Image (spheres, rainbow, N blue to C red):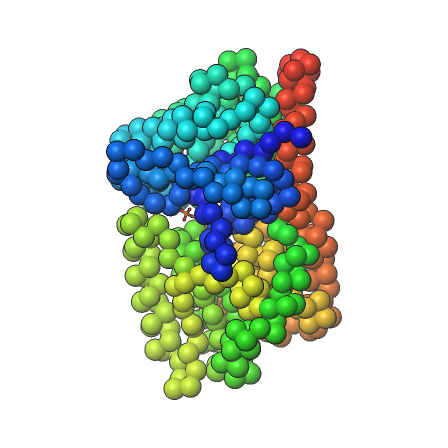
Length: 471
Ligand code: G6P
C-alpha cells in the first residue's frame, strides 16, 4: 500500500496530556491518518528568523510528523496576510473584510514554494499526496514544477462561494486558478462544488459533459463533494465516559438545575457569535419565564489575534457579553458564561452530553464538526437539541436539526424556546435521524471515499479514459 503524505498549514504534534488543537481540519486529518502509515507535513505554529531553520521530525503511532517554522515575513504575508485576510474572508462570503496587498500574495506563493522544496526531500515515487485547505492551493503546481508526478489531491475545508465572489480575489489565476495541477479537488458540499463548477465554466477551463472534471492546458482535474465526518462511535463512547468525570459533575453542579445552552467556536467573525448572543438576549427579554432558568456557556478560544478584524471582533463580543449580563443577570445567575480557552475532547464531550441545546449558528461554515460531535455525544434516550444555521455545511446532512437563519434574531430566539420546550419523543426522533447520518458518513467514509476517487482518477488518466469525459 502506498504511503499517504498529508500536507496542511498547521500541524500540531500530539503531546500526551495536552488538548487537541481547536478547528475541524486538525481533528479530521488526524482521524484519517490514524490507521495508516503516513507522513504529515506543515507549519509548526512557531516563528523563527534564525539562519538555518530545519524541519523537526517526530514519530507518534505510525505517523511521522515533519514540521517547519516560518520566518516573520512568511508568517505575516502568507498566514496573516493572503491566507487569512484575503482567501478566508472571501471564501466565507465576506468581501467587505478582505484586505489585499501584492506583497502578501508574493509571500503566499513563496511559502508554497518553500513547502515544496522541503517536501521534495521527503517524497517517494509512489507516495499519494493529500493537501488540505486554502493556505496551500498552489502546492501541486510547485511540486509538478519540481518534477513530481505523484497523485495529488486537494480538499477545501472551508466554503466555496459563487463565481461573482471568487472573481473578487485579486489575481485569482495565481491562487484558485492553479487548482488545475491537482488530480482531484474535494469540497464539503454539493453547493460548494457546484459554485466551483460555475466558476470554471466562466474561466478558461474546458468542463466535462457531467461537470465533474475539467481540463486546463491538457491536464485533467476531477472535482467532487466529500462532506467531512467525525469518529462517530468513538466520540459517542467518549461522551458516555466523560459524563461521569469530576469536570462534568463540576459543570453540572454549577448550573444549580438550570438548563444549559452551549456554543463552541473559535473566535472568528464567520461563526455568528454576535448574532447568537443578540438572539439569546432577545429570547430572555421576550420569554421572561425562562429568566434564571437557562445559562449559555460560550466556549471561544481566541485565534488569529494579530489580524485587526479578529481583534475588533474580540472587543465587540466582550462588550456585548458584559452588556447582556449586566442588563439581564441577577446576583446568583450570569446568563452568559463566556470563556476564551479550549478544552480537551473528553471535557467537551462531557459538556455536550449535559446540554439542553447546542447553538451552532455560523454565518458561513464549510462543515462545522461541533454540530456532528454534539449529536454523537447525546444520550439517545434523552437527547439535547441541535440548533443549526442553514449556512453551515452540516445543514445539508443534519436537516433534522432546528434549522435557523442566523440573520433573523426573532427566528433564532423562537428556536431557543422550541428547543427548551420540545417533547421527548420529538427530540428522540430528530436525534435518531441525525445520528444515523453521522454514523454512516463518518470520518472513515470521508477519507476512504476521497482516496478511492483519487486512485481511480489516476488510473483512468493512465489508461487514457479521462479524455472521453469531454467527448
Ligand atoms: C479552520 C481552517 C483550518 C485551520 C483552523 C484553525 O478550521 O479550515 O485550516 O487550521 O480553522 O485556524 P488557524 O488559523 O489557527 O490554523
